[in-house]
Image (cartoon, rainbow, N blue to C red; front, side):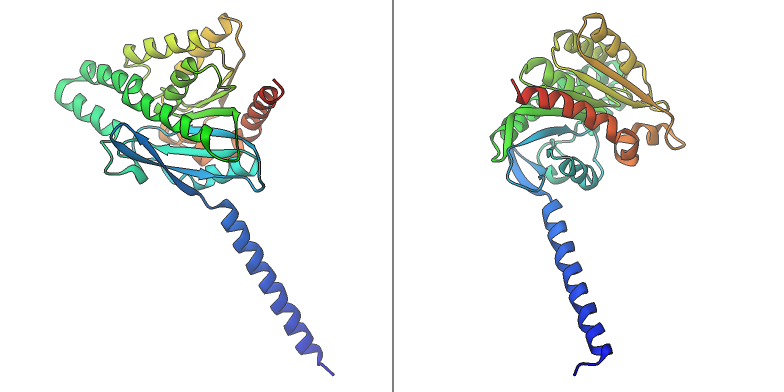
Length: 282
């Protein structure tokens, strides 16, 4: 005969083992893989989060902002939980691509210190429309080739400088079914006529639905208002959400994509689901 204490101990042991296995499997399912993206002479790296299952899945190319991005793990897992492959390229000098070229923000800051605002703004536009856009083009091609990805259903999501890149990339690639720009150009819009001209030209070419996402206390919400109005005036699909101020600083408001995912989660995935589901039926 087994004592009650022994039976309880066995049950607790089995439950702990089940919890361990379940947690381990969950962690393995949400863990990002790393892929190489060769852009010119650079050997860049990207992280990929995948939903559970075999697919083919819709996907998102995520364009990071300038500077060193924070950990993308929570963001990648969120998109995977919603059924999207999440592909985040680290462009030259960023994070996993450290040592592969110089990071764009550092280049522009050095130019601003040495030669002033006008020179820095011209350089920023040249990099935006040149090597930085080239790197995201290459990343998009790699994403389209990945097993388990539905190449007809790839949206572009960008933050800050990456939000600007997302608009430029979609303007030249009519296969993109949707774009989401988080705080795109918020930090540079007011001081750079070069950037304003570049992005205005891009949205005039767009046929892709665009969702502009900002917090009220971002560095500026003018790019959202101006570009959204430009798209609306052409009768193209668009959406603009300026959420209440988040945090206590402009930096926190600008980082709503990372710091307050619950704020925008439902709206963004409703938007993506609508337009990527439509692209599947075509």
